[in-house]
Image (cartoon, rainbow, N blue to C red; front, side, top):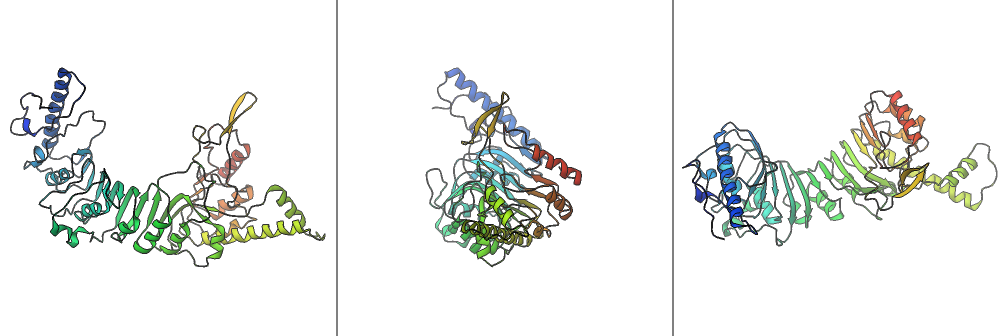
Length: 482
């Protein structure tokens, strides 16, 4: 479509008509097309005039923009002028046709520290720019190949945080790739040589081994998915400085788990861990008993994962155990009763082992063993029913093979967790009563919040009087809790 004629410049010599990247307008009448392009042209001029005249500007956040008033052509417009925004430290919401716009912005704002932008195309300036030493946080809404990611990273040696949607091993359709000069491709600078601690936030990575072998300085990783065997293997062998792993995705319910999960390997291998937050991952109780190697991360402050595989007794089995193990009981046990007693003893051994392992984390402040994420609209097993003309929803749960968290099961083995502030008990098949709350109130002096007793998260369930009574009793014991 040929360019549409627009009005003369409002600020001659500052931004000219030829600098303006006209928006593509389709399926409109000629008049509406002209009005749309003219509106963008006027907004572009006022936008650039406002920005470049605000020489003391420190923070620029663009939100809810109908037009794109930064549509200067690549290599043209105010970003290529001598104007210097020396005080600008943060820019968010900018959009660039390609990544060359980032370097134009960095030339205009040489002290920029935080940058969050959209890029539609991966393209590095040629000739290659000098490394930028001031940028600390970079968020790019563009998918990159591993090589392209490392190339971008190499230009920012002091970068401490980077966020991306996708890092693919082999570039696909939308994944950025560019044929760089041969001398750059062969140079060590094309790989990351920085040793500054790096935080990486990414939604998907196709090949962790290839990526992480170049990131030994990675200290924090936030991922949209739970820990996989490939990811744990790469983290334990290639990222010795890892301090935090977080996953952003929450499962609908926590009752499903496979035969094996790699979570325990990370706890055993990475001594610098302070945060391990991945509720979809789990540790099997028997794995703790089998593997005598202690957890290495004794400085862990936040642990969010499931502990499953505990042999719990059903009500009838518990009644049999209470009867046959009562003092003075002398009747010879039947074969079925012997099996139930053995199951009870295995359960106690499992829970003692888990409690002892958790107690080794003496700096623990947040311990989440379960989390509630169900709702009646999306939870496929929610069932409706009526009581006295009132509608309620019944959900499957809690997860049966979890810790009992009773004094009888060995809860008092967790007395070393003096710094514990928050504990998450949602979806857990616990047996917490008044005696347990009295012990917690004394043993955990910093405890402020108990998820699972604080309030009901499930939508449409009946009023749980027992739960409310426990919460109120704990608030009497510890008025400082919520």
